[in-house]
Length: 65
Image (spheres, rainbow, N blue to C red):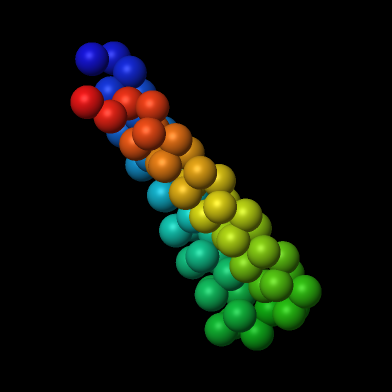
């Protein structure tokens, strides 16, 4: 049962990280910040999304019942 709780916590943390980076990138873009910083944040978001998808699919595969 503990592993199920850890999976849920890890999933929520990963999804929140993606959302925070997305919002930071959008805020930087709209406030007129540097385009390089905005681009770096969006690249970080894509990387975090990739990690989140890999982790969630791995959880679904290894912990299916």
